[in-house]
Length: 166
Image (cartoon, rainbow, N blue to C red; front, side):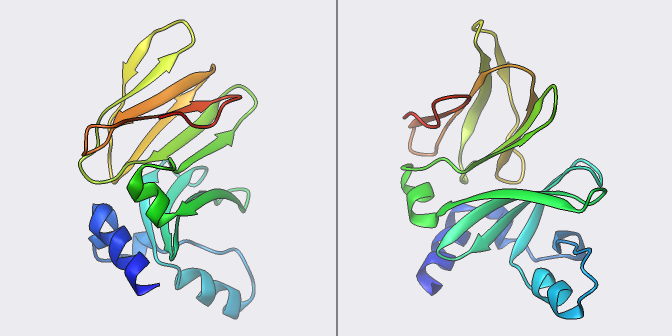
């Protein structure tokens, strides 16, 4: 576990930052024990879209996770992948938060990642920023999100029928 934590912190700058009060995931539970358990999670707020969409990167060794929290409705969703697989480029950690007419997407990007873009089915490319080790976008059609990692490999994930290509 210690080795996995060190590996994650070595490749995700956001996990090397001091955990602040903003990074603590909130719990609507009435149980003091449940709220304390949530507060102890090693999380970092990586995108703040307001109370309806807050995105956290979570170190849960030997996994790293993305979790989207909707505080208004008291709901959350997430996805995890083994840290070693993400660092080696064998897995792209992604999350889709589906709405009736769109999907909020988040893709974890290791330190040094660059050239992130969304490519729609019609071939239209849109550059995307990488902030706090994540790429965040809202999609209204089947789209491919890609980025280049620090080693020069292009990693691609498609929000639709096929989950991952490299």
